[in-house]
Length: 569
Image 1 (tube, one colour):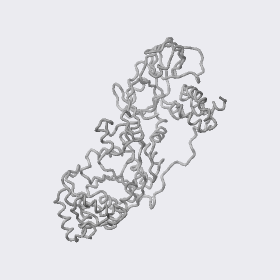
Image 2: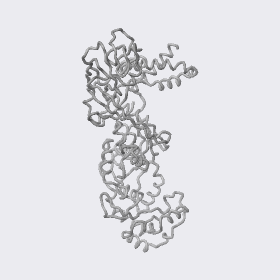
Image 3: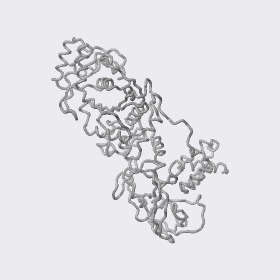
Image 4: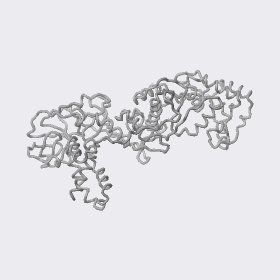
């Protein structure tokens, strides 16, 4: 292999290692190499062993040594990109100090990343134009709403770093809705229908008028008043829209229905409840909402809500739509998640394989990642399926500069070393940031991972990272070795992780995608045990650290063992 090819491979390996916590991946380096050097594709089999060797050499270096060598090869790699910072486009018809947006969660479940992106967009624009944000609970379906979700949503919004000037429950405006509904009836724009649901659906499908729509205003006024004494399913109030419209949402939709179920706030005070489109149409106007940003699943509802407001003489907000956001391999719908919980596939809505905001928090995804992701994908009208690697990439850039580093070994195997003087080694908590130091005790008994131990054989010479070089004497359930003082090329010697006696017992939860090619992966979570260096014991719940040569993890619970959740490499 020519020197220029070897140099190129080493540069690629260094860049991959520096971008992934000091550990380069062979497959990624090979992919980059063959992509940048098409002439080598025909010789891939011959090149792969060299890549494996060079990746091993690079991974044997400390992170600081990797960075130093890469600076000498390509200093521009560390330069701050001079590209314009990503930002969202300006709002149409927006005036400084006059923009009012809303965060409109329904208290019927835990928000997921799609909700988080929507919350961010609405909050971002209100703050950008020095406007106001209203937290509005869309809670007019008593059968779906639950008291626990009001505070759960507030908590998730605070975690995202979002604030609001006013909080409002739509269910507090029931009398207002009744007044506007009465106005529609008295104008001849709404009528009471007592047909069964099957007949209503059939007529709407065919675009034919319901016979109930022929009743006069006096009859409908009387029947509207009587609806408050009727039972569930006996009658609904419908809008007189356009039964022949191509937009099926306009085909005389239901505005009010009877629901015999207590509300988490109002109890049994009300039984006639507005549908979302009616309540939302009223609220966006009377609360002074100027701009509505929401996903395009509501596209057909815009015409309906604007129609309702025009009939009532109410102002309509400016509406901007974007596509629904999904994460590949991660369900967001309660319809999909609830059975997984009931079957014990996932532990709850904060299971780290999910993308609820609570699950992201547990996994070590920082809230700023949601905002940066929103700016990255923007107000796209396509249907993006976001790859989890994009979330990881953004999160890594945010936590890498501040995450403290610690040693950790998985499935520890005892390593007895002759000639190693007891003492301690002091190492930085971060390769570049001034985060202080930690001290690791050293004795003749250390621990290495079972995987590393299985690859050792007598006469192998290896380096214990940041400690010493050793020659292997015996390999097995316990590994014995002897310190060697012979000088070696640190770039070529294999380097392995170690942990001392008296370390912190760790149980690490390692999540992976719940779905691969739409197939449920029931074994998509693993539990790994190991030992971390003693200094890790000072970490608190919610701290995010990097276990060197393993990846980033968040402290989930303190105890024996300390439980952490693996975030990503």
